[in-house]
Amino acid sequence: MKNVAVLALFLAVSIGGGFFMGISNPPGAWYAGLNQPWFQPPNWLFGPAWTILYVCIGFAGWRVWRAGLKPALLLWTLQMAFNLSWSLVFFGLHFILAGLLVLIGMLAAILAFITVTWRGDRPAALLFLPYAAWVSFAGLLNGAIWWLN
Image (cartoon, rainbow, N blue to C red; front, side):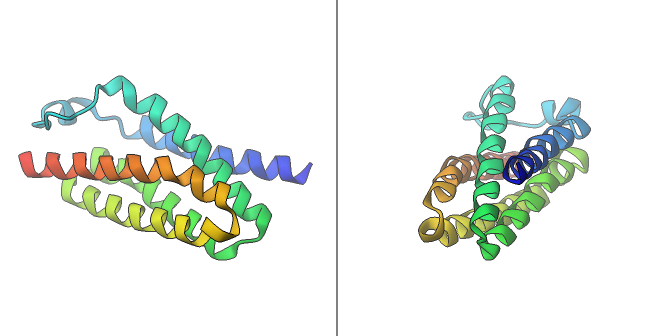
């Protein structure tokens, strides 16, 4: 029963935290007025993509907690802090370059998590691969928006 409760907690932090930051810092008119790169995905794609990623993030965190992988759990917490701060920095404060720096820190923490868990809990590492790909793309998008504006 404890495992289920902790899994629910990890999912609540990742999904709930992401949802809360998203509704607290919506893109709004400011973002709509920015010059966008040609590869900007449609807005409807971000919600489903992040929901799937947050489920993967929550499961990966639970797995490393269950396996007792403290360095991985620390990296999970660090990437989550970067993740949850990005919306505030980029959409809330309108700091485009600072948002890019947050994404770079997030990607570094994600890649470190994958590296640390690759031998200790490969499924947790694999759950982070799509996340690493998406954050890499988000960094490219964030960088392009900074360059164009």
